[in-house]
Amino acid sequence: MSIGKSAAWMTGVAALAMATSPTVANAQDRADQKPFFDLYKELVETNTVVDVGSCTQASAQIAARLKAAGYSDADITLFSTPDHPRDGGVVAILKGSDTTVKPMLLLGHLDVVAAKREDWTRDPFKLIEEKGYYYARGTVDDKAMAAVWADTMIRLKQAKTPPKRTIKMALTCGEETTFAFNGAEWLAQNKPDLIAAEFALNEGGGGRMDENGKQEVLAIQVGEKAAQNYTFLATNPGGHSSQPVPDNAIYELVDAVKGVQTYEFPVKFTKTTRAFFTATAKAQPGVVGDAITKLLADPTDAGADAIVSRDKAMHSTLRTTCVATLLNAGHAENALPQRATANINCRIFPGESVDGTLTKLKELAGPKVTVTANQPVRPTAVPTDLDPKIVGPMTKVAAKHFPGVPVLPLMSTGATDGIFLQAIGIPVYGAPGMFIDKDMSGVHGLNERISVKSLYDGRDYLYDLVTTFAG
Image 1 (cartoon, rainbow, N blue to C red):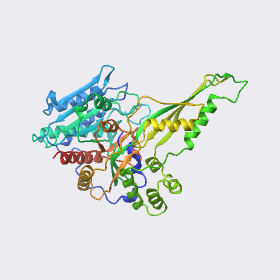
Image 2: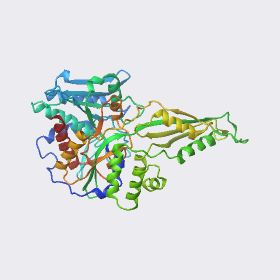
Image 3: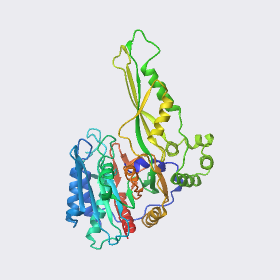
């Protein structure tokens, strides 16, 4: 998911806000906005929940629009596998005029989190405009960006003048569900040449508005954690509950989970998180700002860590985190448990490995509990360079579209499909541009929404950004 996975910037930086929103045309006032809306609406209203809807259908619809704009069959690759016929994706290529310049890649995902009609105020798969907002599942995550990327490819093709740099677009399925077929991973493993690029622009960045719709801050995602699940397993022969014994699978599991609860992984910094915390310290003079400054100078300063880590987003940005998310134990109410399991969800700091985290979890769990890494095992997160050739244009174009709004680099505490591209040497950056409400606009929750103005502002920004990079 996009902005929600980069929640670290959403707290602790409000003092950086310094501008009101610029005045722009209303939605669909311009002739070029209506075709975009039609594409966006069709995409949002195509159900792409894993095992329910079809990313393959959504990909075919986008491919049809690309062909109508002038792309040939050779420019478009629709892909899926026999085992996952509804989880397909699409890759499109707009060839540049200068073969000496390496391509860029626009990455987005088509799948969305499940949404039950009985829980929502409105039909989650019907785009509804109400009081200045578009409501529906995927209006933000990630169909806003996916629609903008497809629209950008169409507009550039229709311009007739090819860009200097080749532009590739990959819209895939499976980002929202760990166990699902993942199109970005499949492309990285099976078609790396098809998506080869100097860098990729992806979800993960974004903007935050206050309660009055004022644009407070923009964030560029530069790096992310790796998500990995582990299973804790305690077993026992069991017996009759009328004759309990000290050895109990539930008690052993609880002790192991408590070990995880009380352990703090060490504080670490990447270039990105160091830049983020440096900016945050300047914006927050006082106890928190002083503590951040001390922690930047000495990551082992426990007192400073305790103060900074009161903010859950900052706490997670500083380190690997592991937390119990699922429990299952016992087989009968009148029997001693023979089996007890817990799922431990970890978000692993860039540069740290799944195996290294497994070793620490085994130590915390103790000898009576078995610890295993669940499939799929994601690649090790690679720290992304705070490359001025990428961050510079993003910041410059933002100053044009959102004057006075501060721009911060961040590392996502969540995970995106970018990790699969990083594994094959493509640095991935979460592009800013789409502003959402302070409450996360229902992303992954009920009544997901995006401000109509924010959608069209973001479209203009991202198009300008792509053309800037593409020359």
